[in-house]
Amino acid sequence: MTQATQAGARPNNIRVVLFGLMIAMMLAMLDNMIVSTALPRIVGEFGGLNHFTWVVTAYVLGTTVSTPIWGKLGDLYGRKSVFLTSVVVFLVGSALCGMAGSGMLGGPQDGMVQLIAFRAVQGLGAGGLMVGVMAIIGDLVPPRERGRYQGMIAGIMAIAMVAGPLAGGFITDHLSWRWAFYVNLPLGGIALLVLITTMHLPKYRTEHRIDWLGAGLLSVGITAIVLITTWGGNEYDWTSPQILGLAVLAVVALVAFGLVERRVQEPILPLALFANRNFALISVIGFLLGFAMFGAMNFLPLYQQTVQGASATNSGLLLLPLMFGMLVVSLVIGRAITKNGRYRAYPIVGGVVMTAGMALLSMLDTNTSKLTSSLYMVVLGVGMGFLMQTSMLIAQNSVEQKDLGAASGAATFFRSIGGSFGISLFGAIFANRLASSEGGRAFGGGEAGAGMDLAKLKELPAQAREVVLGGLSDAISHVFLWAVLFTIVIPVLAWFIKEIPLRTANEAPPQATPEEEAEVALGKAPVA
Picture 1 (tube, rainbow, N blue to C red):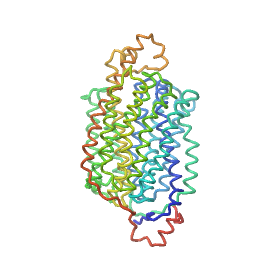
Picture 2 (cartoon, helix red, strand yellow):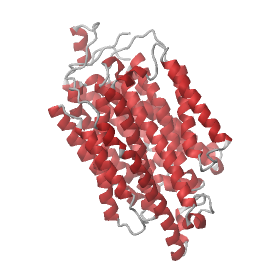
Picture 3 (spheres, helix red, strand yellow):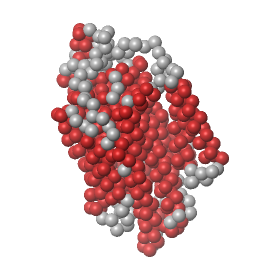
Picture 4 (tube, rainbow, N blue to C red):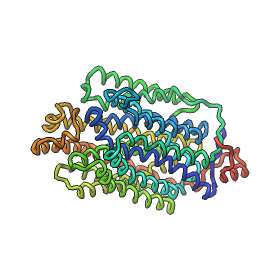
């Protein structure tokens, strides 16, 4: 297999390509942020709070199982065509999500099932967006210089993080929650146009085949584990045949996956990567980061719109302190790494600060002011900012250039799978805590808020409403208390990371001549 890298690419050409990548990154980021503020309204219309986490879980699960596949496909067949395909899949999923429960696809009675299924399709495309952007940057820019260019990506992420909650809240309050998905279509069209015309990457020639058996076994195993954490103790008893059957299925699928990966020529997730201590440690850290991060992002809007009485638009504004803390620290850390090449201290500090943020959020109650909760979110955002860039940078610097896509995919995969487990487990913790509370039994009919609707909540008598809000705030704060048990492990693991000097140039393949490298740098190489 031959693979041309873009070492030495001229900065002007890199900036043009990055512009197209930033639009695609905004596509994925905007969707996450817009939908988070629209979710309470969506689940209120389609059937209640007991479906809250499934709308998110389906998306994250789709992202998780597809990420290593997209990464490996890019390594084998060229990143441009694979990346553009992921954009198209994402847009198709977005259009279907917007039509869920409408007259075109049945009716409102089927709306929640349809939305969950279409969110999974959307997640399949999002997996390719995330890993594609990171892998292409890895092709274009050597590790030592990546902090500077990832700072530009952090800037566009900040725009999405600020605009997303505001747009989601405005759409939910003034239009329809369906436009939280339809808004992706014009933005995605622009992204496709820019990427097709500006992103010139070398062709990849390979005689190998994608490891579809390994991909299928991994998907089955991960899905089974997510279903266990979602249904266990909630839909079914932990000792029920359904949960025990899923546990057996997960073990068999993952053991078979490990055996397959040891024998195939091009494994979907090369197990040899985990022999590298830094890669193994940062993979676990990424898992824990995703686990805690997704829990925070999806339960904060619920707290703000119910306990604090904010509108969907205002709940978007109330998330800005978290985004601001993450943005500022990400930009500063990116430039610092480019300047001095040091990175080991950042995940250690980030883990400590993130744990402090989760501990503070576990103190939320019905009397917590918006100012106080905003300060808590700033602390959490700062901790996340220390971790977001450095985790991917360490993963990419731990492998050879030929495995860059697989490494980027694996790093994104573990963060996503952590999110899948976090959402499902935190959702189960939240539902059980709420169902056992006086407020949950009174308002949710004894079924974890199955009939919860924000409009009905506001119609309750003042005394009854206080009881319900107390149950909600207690259940949400309980989620953050559990999150502390996971984030506290991050700085402990980060302490054992070995600081390996960042490479100042990507490895050039033996087959590439100086003339070929110059063509790639100028964007004149054959495109995939």
